[in-house]
Length: 360
Image 1 (cartoon, rainbow, N blue to C red):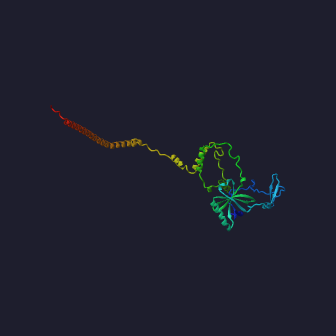
Image 2 (tube, helix red, strand yellow):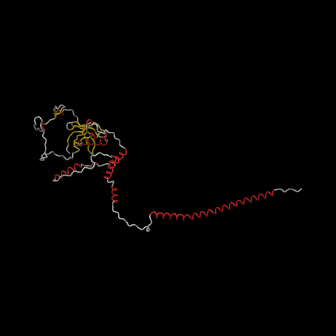
């Protein structure tokens, strides 16, 4: 890749010779202006408005237009005499977390290449320091006649630099937000979350410019003598206002799921339902019992078997209980007889012990 700027990175007292290389390129299809009647190219000539003469690039200088229209000439020598310490140096001024850089400040991107063998060691040192600190470097540099702000970070094994806009070049978002107060319901937020979860993540490297491909196809078709590509039909409701936000969110979630193939089961079920059905001849009622009758018969048979199995055990238990009752009765009678016998003996003893009265 061709370098567009040569200089050095100033890292404290360390100087790293580098080359600046464009990290991006435009892939947009460019067009030329032509005369519609004969297809001739339209070219612009640089003409002096005072005398109408065409001038060459060597005859063109710089000037600043004042508010009243006065032109103040500026020469290259005037600009070279200005104190610009970053004219050939990318001067690192701080190291900050990447989250502190507002994405609105991001501008053009460049790769920094080590310029020469001696630059390899300090270049690698700065790269590894940036990796380990998990920070980015904020720097000043000069390019195309003006001082700029930049951010250095590591991309794979290369130090990349993003041009940054100065903070005063970022416009405040005044008057941009909706002025009408709006209340968002929790149900709507839940559907929005569901839609975000359904869309999920994407490998950004798989995205491509569909419009550019369509333009290239159209150009190829015209080059072969065709009429190009027919314009697509506008979608129904396109560009209209969303009347029902909840319905739009629900439809979006459903469409996202179908796009990811999650509606395959529903499609299969629908296909099965729409398949041809062959009717079977009805069987005779006497041939087989209904499931309910069969279940009832089985239940009755099981109940009868349980009762039959429980009957001998019940009789045996009853038989055991009856002898026990008789035995208890006999035991009670025996005790009663024993008590009577004892009482009788006591009475006899008492009679024997009573002394007889003497006869006078």
